[in-house]
Image: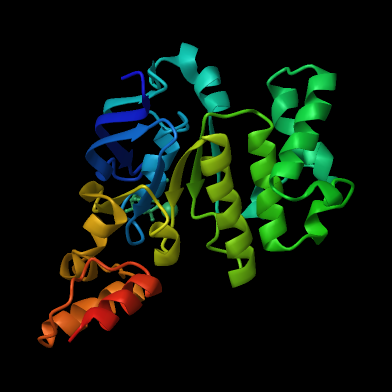
Length: 281
Ligand code: ADP
Ligand code: MG
């Protein structure tokens, strides 16, 4: 328990259609634990319930049934909401919707200002956060003139300035070009490895998912596979059945095996593939 950052117990959420009062289960009976310092990726096709799950992790949504605990705090207890939001930050897909100020450093200061942090401490945190995401040189710039990847890094700095223990990223690279994607993913990895921040990353890029400690795969509101990237991606057929890809080299190994070649299909990287191929007789 000590070591658990997030715990979902039978998390269930239903949207109610206001026109006919019909109910739709967006998340249905999810059990999930995320350890402190862990890097968890959530995969799933559109509409599988990923964003609804994510919004429960910082009390933007409260379960219809079941419980969510963030650092042992029950999200359904309103007395915890403030504390939970400052501990578990959230970064969304569209950086333009997350930037509130007209100068980068003012934007980053916005979060800690709202938390009531002292001005001298805010100055310190803004500087540190911008350095961490590699945007310090842009502190006087106007955010709307930055590239997508730079804007997203400013949004991340704004969260960092609140000193969170955990950050939930909901498809943070979906609107970025390949170089912007790389900037943002490298930043996320750094926050996890160098600062020990717990990461929950929702993505549909397989090359991002292979970097995770663990992957949870969602389908129709449920988590249907959970495990290390190796354990998850070896389920090539199941992944394809629910409309997801596996890394290209994993698929290649799978096809080679199907055509009768004696090769282990638990391959995630090109280097591993080269090694295995060289061992073939
Ligand atoms: P994902 O992020 O995996 O694409 P979502 O969590 O956004 O999935 O959506 C899960 C399901 O809940 C979908 O069927 C979606 O249509 C439905 N849903 C999401 N948001 C709302 C909403 N505000 N009102 C009604 N239904 C919604
Ligand atoms: Mg979504």
